[in-house]
Image (cartoon, rainbow, N blue to C red; front, side, top):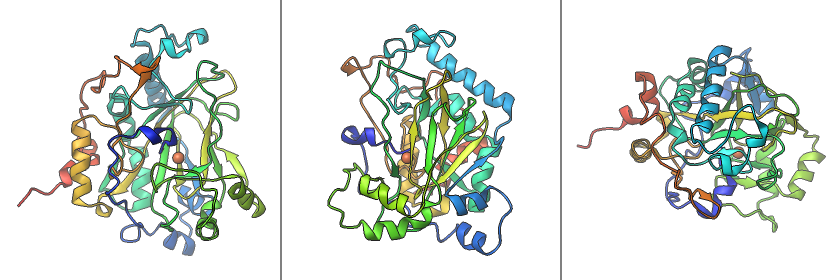
Length: 351
Ligand SMILES: [Fe+2]
């Protein structure tokens, strides 16, 4: 998930790098699905702009990943204990943004993060969409949001799309793997159902909007009050996506969305997973991505490492001394399939 909070502090954003213009060369999702329904989650993406792939990860393994995430928090030895809500405080935990994002500590390359990215049911959903097994995956963030936190800023709605409004068409399918029971009051993804189909019309009308919300990258667009009214006037409604542990939530990058924090008694845990066909990205992208992997660097949701992110993680106003880049589990040990997802095997040897 591209983080608007990253804005002012992204220090190694490669703005000259080009993101894929369209998925026209290798992906025919909309073209095919409009003619003949697929009979699965792909029809939901085409119609609604989002879908839930139920049981992408078997429940026992999903529970195991959630357990590892709790343990990861506890292993900082700052005081957090999973069974004691009174320990949910930034002083007792690694730093988590108000939107639930963990942006440092090498978590993007932890063993559980990579294990989720390599899960056959997760990769398999993207293989179906892109009709290719030659995919690369983002090194995106991990989400851990606890209910009713008063120790950090409020998580106000930030409706946005993660795609350049000047580039219409289907360009990216974003995803997150949900790892705890996630009902109506448990926070999580809110989507504007079907608005991806109005995206081109919307952005033609709002092209010269004087009240544009500032963005740190062209690949992010925030919907202001007038934009929200435009969507409402066309009958669009916002829907909270609910999911069970192990479900994969997918959304078209043109679909307006945001997240909310839990208001019940359960936290929300998720891992953001986004894949692109390797055929859609350049050798320059793959070389940059290889360096990001080897340095345990995070990226945003763009799998071609469009943005390699390096953010200061501040604890009480100073860089957190616990923000080690190397994951607690060490550098990732990947299966052959997982290693292909880094893009490294697709880097051509220099002549
Ligand atoms: Fe987003």
